[in-house]
Image (cartoon, rainbow, N blue to C red; front, side, top):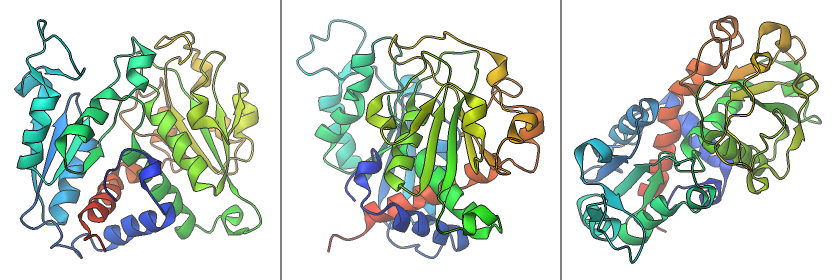
Length: 327
């Protein structure tokens, strides 16, 4: 693996998932691949779980980690080629990235969409420019449209739950599990990154009946949802579900808007009665009693804490793949 930007950088999802679960069982079993190597983690927007889990994962492999908050600690970067830099940007990525490529062995970058211009955001200019000019492997810690480490973690969590559970539907080899991605209300305009990425990974994984449910006007890009069943009927979507992934996202067609904040879309225990004793997932942070009810988050059906803890093992598996010698 050279870079980790999306599911397309992974040749075998199941093998990568099992690698992550092996690290969960024995976190320090590979302490040498990263010895005398550095990973630079650049954050263009805030992070808690992504930052900490990536640091721990790298250290488990013997790497030194250096964190740099670009917006607060560095110059404002310009990403457009041939830009006339007479405005607020101070340094061009064409000048900064090659230096970072000399400082580090792996560069991990977290960016965020503007939510103003869909064409600009979906071009993924920021992360593509780092790949173009840094000359070293680049890992996405979330980009304008995708969050691949979170999505790998989600598949790891689902796989782990299936492996350890006695749930009848999981043991039926002739029936795929049913996964539902359900939109939820939120007080802020949020990007489509997590939803896009989750859809992309579940579809590529190919081991589930996959349904995405959302209010009218909240469709996602077909680039990521092709292969899923799409519906505006949340109750119908939830019927027979084994896993329900809850996430808000803003509008895609009329980009970056909030059209609906219907509290009726918040998942509750009553709605879970429609499912096949489904486990509930969310990437965090979560707005309690807006996106998800206390009764679910604090109840036995929530996988949220376990899901977040698995971020370490997903990151460790990816970094180990990048550090592995080329055969």
